[in-house]
Figure: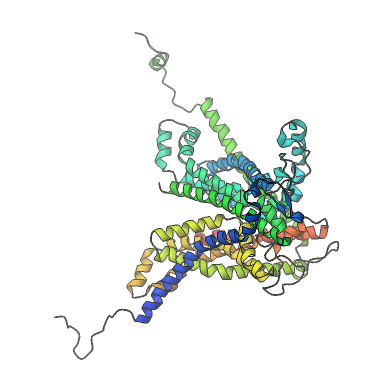
Length: 318
Length: 297
């Protein structure tokens, strides 16, 4: 019964793949697996490399590196308190401005305020904000933004000078312009992620709320924003990580002063700007101290990013 | 029997008004919030238009043949161009693409084709975290592994740094592009006897190719504008590129270096270089948008 082949022809054999084919196949899968693992490996390699290079500085300064405010390459004395302060304050300033703006923009772009075709164009334009190179924002900041906000700084100093944040007359570069440019750069991230989490809410929520007689904005504030809250927080954290690591625009606008000054109108420095300014000419212990500062920044942004990634992922589940 | 005021109003002869009341505080609140959120959008887009306007108006004067063929002028002299920086950017970004595209595409193939479960989750997680690592940290990584070991600032070190920055973008866009390819295509390929690598190389990757190229283009445009990792890996020179193991000029570093000098001619070149970078980003973004609209299957 089984032999229905003509008897004068050998039956066609459907054998397994040849050993060569099997090896090729398995080799290909392994090749892609190695490349995939190497992406994760680079992250670990980076941490190890920066850690090893900063060992000499760690031995020399220990944790005092974080609380000392001396940065003196001539005498090999290094401390990063002013830069850590500058990193935190400039990012906080940027978040303060960007969170309301970004969430407002996200609401405007996720609800039916505008026809769909106009909305997609506007969403594209907001995303474009993130694509403009940082160094272009820096150039624009030096020649356009700083002159433009000088009167604002003057006003703040003259009328609110008793507040420590405005205690020095504006000299141009400083925390304020850097914070404003950071705001522009992180706004698209906050907008994109907030809009995503608002748009991915089940439509029943909105319908139920509107059906109970709530107005559109009551629905937004009492139902949609609370439901999307964790997603928005995740987006804000990602933006914070970006703000702390942003280098060029900040370096060009913050004034790069290594002295600790509370005033937002005075020049300051961030860890990223410190690295950008000094790495090319550094030697000896200074390289190690810079690596140590880089490690601190790396650790902070890594923590913030992992936290943000975790939150955003939790949200996507439902 | 006492009746509450609301009961009385219902029992009146004239019907209860269900039409929209534009005078109520709730309606006013809605109108004000709509205007406020619209203003947020306006304020968000204002810097975009301001940047594009200034870059074009200040850079357009120098947009001529000299810009592409001449070397930058030394301090205080006029004329000149940024030809060396354009070539340098092409070389460094080309090196970065050469390193990151094969690794990224194959890593994405593993994620979407061969792996299921924990490992893929962790690799995707690592990819997202890697894309959040500040570019300056990637720069000091490249400085540590290449500049310190070879004792030489080089185009190669800059290329490696940019490759690390491009890698997560390439992995993510390729991963997404591969997942859009319907599974039936793979079943059909395996069904006619193709093996895994044949299916991936001959069927799945070609189907996803337009989307992958789009992603790579965006990554290249993004990398061309990166400055932080280049200022202490590729450094900068005023001369034509001398090879990949020598310092090399780039547009982004040129903008940074020339933005803080007091010489008008060099500042103009910084604006012209910015114009080229912004045009690169604009054109690639628009093309990417157009390209992703089409679907293959």
